[in-house]
Image (tube, rainbow, N blue to C red; front, top):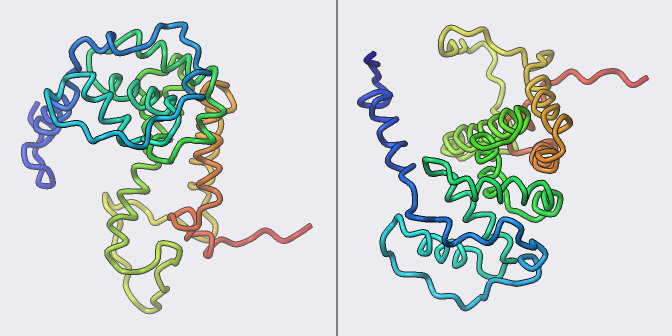
Length: 247
């Protein structure tokens, strides 16, 4: 089936071809992985040296080079961060590397609470994407997919919005007596004062964390941060909401 697309030349054929190229696997990544029963405590205790040099670019499918790149990016941090990032890098490729998947799931099962508190948002989103592809349960897969998509769309939307020069913590001014542009696909506009779509979306994602204790720390950290962050569309629309009367 051919897809016509004016937004992306070549349509989904070109998009899939690009994705498959990015998913080409490393050569023998297992050789760089610790044992399946490794003690994670030692990785928390060791710090990546601050004086690492940026590794020269070699063969892009060399797992040792990728590992060196990640350690350089994370210098000064605990070695557990580099292990976590390396597992994600391996699992972004196809076919799946079973030892890396086993370690990733064991890492979040045993150390998820500490990881969720310590990792930067970039790596939380990457972890969610990895759960989406490699989770052991339906809640891990759906929860990971939902979290990754939610934060990717926030980044996409607010990157475009920032071109206006307006603070992401401020809503756009209400312009009276101005016609409003129609939404794409002729969708009905969302009722900012009374709509509950945003609440339902977040509640459904929260449920996945409540249903699965492995992804729970990730869900709680990411969604908890979102509820406290005024610089997203979820924060901005609160200015329109009709607050319930106090009891």
